Image 1 (cartoon, rainbow, N blue to C red):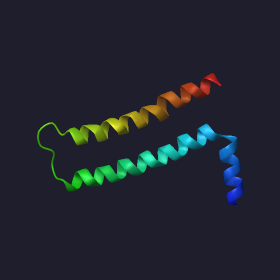
Image 2: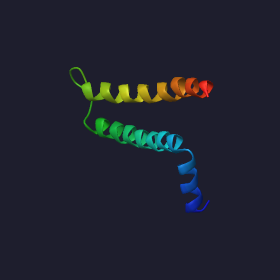
Image 3: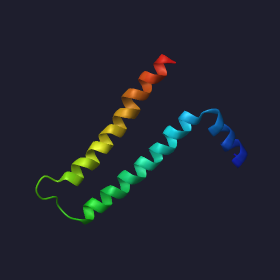
Image 4: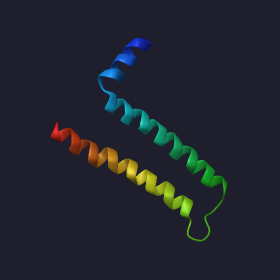
Length: 75
């Protein structure tokens, strides 16, 4: 697909493009964050960075499995 076609689709569905590109960004950040935290070793104490990483992952999953289908039903 040529670049002009991709740009036209983004202009046609801007909200969908933001959600999709945001999802790619979140996935990349979760992937990188996991490796950064793994390189620091086993968490000691409360493990706040690990809890934050898990919280972001849970929010991401809930968004796509619960909120998006509910939104699509209302259309």
